[in-house]
Image 1 (cartoon, rainbow, N blue to C red):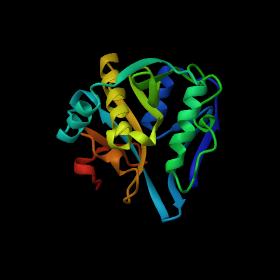
Image 2 (cartoon, one colour):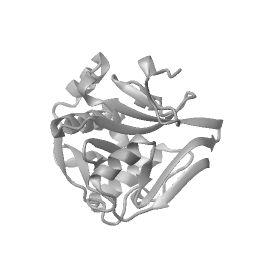
Image 3 (cartoon, helix red, strand yellow):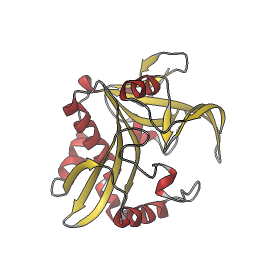
Image 4 (cartoon, rainbow, N blue to C red):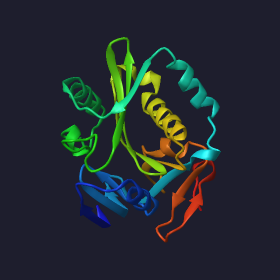
Length: 219
């Protein structure tokens, strides 16, 4: 990682979170960061902060299919709790990675994830009593930001990563939020490109401006 900035904070007020997100900041635990260039195994990548303008968001047909495919799953939204079942799901989830394999769920969340450094809700998805996915959503004053998502590899055909993002968007709309931040992608093609396939999407140009991202392409 290069060309970046960071700071640490154990508490950030909701209104300040909105300002940070609007300027390209993210956080894992109490570590806040932003960077515009990243060196990966595939070479230099230029970071693309994204957000969705919730008032203009509409589901694509493929996203509607994801919702229908998972209509029998049970969803619970509550303050984030990291228990043994969640940690086991994380261990299964990380088996998908061949590089930059995360060591612990606490690489992304603090030891008090529901309140440190800000209010955070979990979107937990169950097939019967089996936990099959969780995502973690920061709540600002007029915006929300997705921190991380995990799912059971046995359910790969269910597109649970997309499903939990859609649930986060729906929850954020119900809160009356203006923006939803799905995290970073890259200008160049990458495995983060799924984040570019949402309507009402904008990208941050690192000069203080958010610009429309039509059809997943930025100019």
